[in-house]
Image 1 (cartoon, helix red, strand yellow):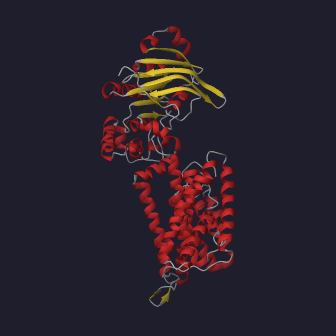
Image 2 (tube, rainbow over the protein chains, first blue to last red):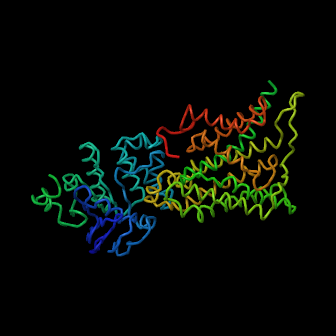
Image 3 (cartoon, rainbow over the protein chains, first blue to last red):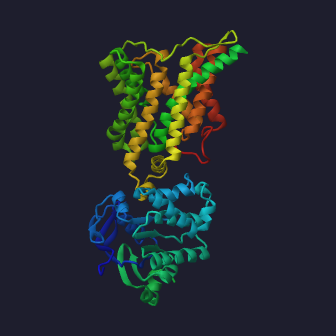
Length: 239
Length: 292
């Protein structure tokens, strides 16, 4: 149990002709929230896409619980308990709210457990319950983000990768989402890797944080240390 | 009045077949954004297989089963072998590939079965029914055609809307990357989508065979009418394909009955242009056009 849940070593990822990540090291402790911070274009989204198998790393290793995922297919990574909530949620607007939720847990193949998980999600996010049979296109931005998060949770993932959940949302909604992410760790023992441009919100719930700049890690410290480091904050985090 | 009713009945029967071909095109368009120009040739091949079963002494139903089964297999093989390499490439590549497949299948059919069209038996009599002393342009076989297409539509709707597999198929079609992140094996779903589409196409081939005969080029018009019906319906909507097929069937039947049967193909063009002028994205298009 001492070993980290997610262990990334020397990760290089190319995006077309551009090297988007260079030698990234990252370890994410079980049951913690780790924030990935940095400016636009620092490589945060690329990191998540490499972790979930959407991008093939050029070199380096990714291990989940000691198992090598570096070149595994997306479908296999999902089945090992990694859920990726992409930027702006990625809910499928043509499907209903209930169908989106069901989709997130279908791969487990256990209908009764899936139905239970979906009911839990409705309890956790009441606005989704009211709109369960409506197309996801009718949801507001905040509700879509809730739906995307709930959909990821119906698969009961061990590791949740969340990409900029605060994007385009009102501060009050952001605060609620952040509180939910924190609760997932504290109460359900899930592990969260949170990519955020909104560093202040992310640091308010994170245990640790790394700061990316031009694809390289420039800091990896406890969240409180980074929040207290004026030089880092001014240079990379914009607050 | 009797004439109008008769032309409408005949229109619904042929429209049901157009609807099936249109549905085959729409299923593939929705899943892979490819217009399958080889659909006419694919259903020609499966109908030839059915004809061979009957020619060898098999029953109508055995032949129908052979057509449907070979449709499933042919659709899956075409997606895996021919279409997969050009997915995620420029649109034109897929167009050229399906056109090429159309030519290859037509040539292959000519080499295997010859160029002379063969007759194909209907499942039931094609003598029109008589109601209160009036003969209708609706035979027991026509009723079978309409019923078979309707049954397939209902089965497909249930599959897509009510089952987990259907949910995965729709997710893979609407948002492949998001679907993969939910653990859906998108490649398999695309193969299955092509297989189902080819199955619907093969049904249309067998149903229309008694009236057009079975030959390498006999089904070319089916692709044209099916495509017209699909575009009228909006190309993206299965319900639109069905309505488009029925509308086109009736429109062509009126043209043939009231004007001249020589003008049927022109009538299809006129119907297409009229609909596209009023609703450029088709009758059932969602708001926000898509690139064809």
